[in-house]
Image (cartoon, rainbow, N blue to C red):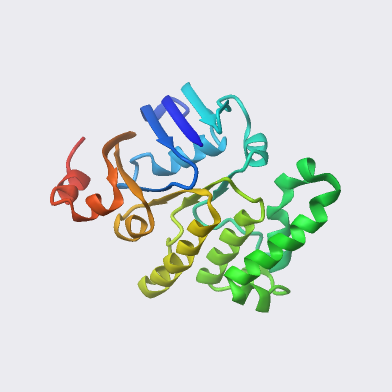
Length: 241
C-alpha cells in the first residue's frame, strides 16, 4: 500500500529525513515515536505531499506518487490529521466535517452528496458528542472534542492511508487513554494507519509494528509487542545517534 525508498527531505538547507525507506501493507498500523526533532512529523508531511522529497521515491498502491502534490494524494486516499488539530474554529462542527469530504468531489461526481451523508453518520457514530454539538462552533469544543472532530474530518475523505500526527497532544492522561481506545475502532475499517507520538506506550498498544526515529533515521523497527518489552528501548530512545 505504501513504500518509501531512499527518501530524503527537509526545510530549506536543513535535512531531516536521511535515506529513509519504509514499506507498509494494506491494513497495517504503524507507530512512529522518538524525541523532538527526530523527523516524525516530517515523515507524515512528505507522505501526504505537504513537503516534497529531495531524493528517493514514494509509491502508493503500486503507483509512483513522488511528484504529486497534496491535493492529488488526498484524492488517492492519503489523508493527514495534523498536529494541533487545525480545525476551523469559526465554523460549526458539521461544516468542519463536510470540508473533510472535499477530496471525494472530483471522483464521485453525482454520488458526492450521498458520500457526505454517509461520512457524517460514520463520524457521528464513532464520536456521538459531535452529533450532539454539530451546530456549535469548532472553537467552542474542548480539546478532546476538537481532536475527535479532527479525526472525524479526516475520515470524511474515506482514507486508504490515515496519518495521525500527535493525536494525544495536549490531552490529560485519562482523556488520552480514552481517545486511543476510540482509535482502536479505526482498525476495523481496513485502512493503513500511521500514528506519530513522542512517547511509545499508547501508539505501540494500538499498532502492529513500531519504529523509533532518531536523526531522521530508523534506529529500531519491529513488532509492537516486541518493542513494548524490549529492555534496551529506553536506552535507544535516549542515546546519541
